[in-house]
Amino acid sequence: MEKLIELLNKYLKTKDTEIHRTPKVYAFEEATKSFIAENGISYRQERVISKRFEFIKWLVNEDKIDTNKLEKI
Image (cartoon, rainbow, N blue to C red):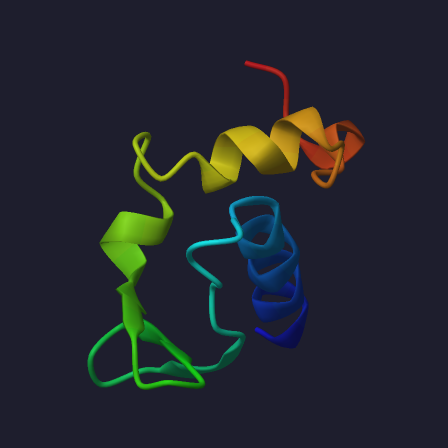
């Protein structure tokens, strides 16, 4: 889970702007299925993996997923 949190923080940094600074995510809360950020903001698991959030797209574009391990269908 630590590696996923690290990648999520790298992704969120790409979304930073001068106006809005994204807080660092430090934990995953199993009970609520949420990633918890420093200022109390939580990112629900469903939101993080959604198409609109674009985290998965970023992982693919940044070559963060080892596609050699994927089974070809």
